[in-house]
Each structure stands twice: as structure tokens, then as C-alpha cells.
Image (cartoon, rainbow, N blue to C red; front, side):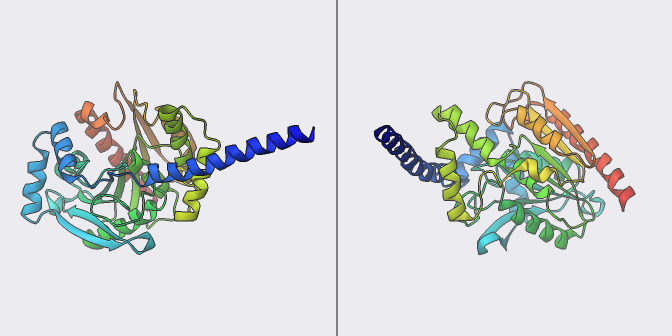
Length: 322
């Protein structure tokens, strides 16, 4: 019996030791990828291929000084970059939108939403590069959790520029998770509404899905170890970084969007997120036939109409509270 117990103990120790090594690898693999929004030419080409003419639109406005660059000091003391621009009709601006990009993206990658808000909805726009993305500094990707604090800082900067009393935060993929994580914080009164497009329920759930889908591995022990490594390095854990937990504290209007055929962030996540928000107004739209982060590309007219309608409803609701 003692020999069997010893063998079992050795087997468990071997699994755990292997898990620790794999955990360190996974933390680096997931949070410090070789490309992290720093391939600007590639991202410009990808964005242009999806939305022909949009890079010329942006370059013309940036070159003429309509879009301007700015930086703030973010979480951990790192310099974080953003671009911002006034509404197409500044004197009649309807509010301000903070547009938050996804994993390994940058401010270029969702210019479609920036153009939607600025030109079609007549909103001022602030578009950050998140921690370790694009032109921003940082040690590693923070998966929305520490980014939520930086987005609140950028929202404050936008408010200082335009002094609007209605601000919406709109994120896609990791940016959507960031948006939901922001929603559970104590927020200034000018942040009124949120739009999340294909965000995950938690970092743990998303990495567990990726681990199974890409490597055919269960969460234990790799994910447990990687979460501990991340805690030691960056100060947060995969389960702590939860959209669901933050949504439970959110009482401001939110529109949930997800592609019907999303298998990267499974479509089922949106129902869990939607159900987690039990306070305040909410809407949900499942984009027919759309894969991950493709709802706008597949349905630009309906996407814009749904955002427009939601914002009108959010303004009505929040004005009554004010």
C-alpha cells in the first residue's frame, strides 16, 4: 500500500510539475504574443479589405488634424496612446463614444465603428490602444481586467475635452469584455451606457475554451498554473477577471451583440452575460450567420440602426433618472 501511495504521489507531483511549466508557457503564449497590435501595416491592410476606403477616410482626417493623438499614464505607470476626434457636426454632437478594440488589435482595427459613431451618429470619439497594444506601453496583454481602469481614465479625458453628459463605451471581443468589466465599477455620472459585441464571460472561461479547442486539453492543471503565474506577474487571476461578476453590479443600459455562428467566443456566452445583468435596462441582438466580430461587417445597416435605437432609449432612461 505504501508503495502504491508513493507512486500515486510521484504521479501527482509529475503532473503538477508539468502543469507549472505548461502554465508559465501558456501565460506567455496568451498574454505576450509576438504580434499584439503592433503590425500597423498589416492591420491597415486588413481593415481596408473589410471596409474599402476607410483608411483614406481616417488618414485624411488625421492628416488635417481632426483626429489627434494623445497619451495618458495608465495602470502601472505605463504610457497609453489614443486617438480622438470631434463629431462630424461638433455643435450638434449627441455625446461621446469610447470605442475599445479587441485582443492583439489597435485603434485602427475598428475604424468602422469609429466612423459609425462620428459620421452617422454624430458622436465625439475617443479610441484607445489598450495596455501592450498598438502604440501603448505595457508588459503584457491584460485581457480587459486592468484595462477597465484605463478605459475609465480615457473616458475622463474625453469628458475633459468635450464636457458631455452622455457617454457610451462600446467594445468588441476583448474590448467587449473590457466594457462589461468597466460597467461594474463605481463610475462618473457622464458614463451612461454600454455596447458589448461578442465579449467573453471571464478570462478563465475563454482560455478554457481556447485550451480545449486548440490543444485538446482540460483546464487542470495548465490553466490553474497559468492563472497563478499571471497573479504573481500582473496582479490578477483568470477567474477574478469576470464579465459576469461585473455585470451583476451594473445598473446602466447595455446592448449585448453576438454573432450567431461565433465559435471563438461561443455564442452561448452572450446569454450568460445577458442573464448576469439583473439591474437596469438591457437589449440583446444575435447577428444572423455572423462569425466572431463580424456582426457589423455582415449587417452594417441593421447594426447601426440597433445602436442608434438603443442609444435613444438609453438617453430617455438616464434623463429620467437625472
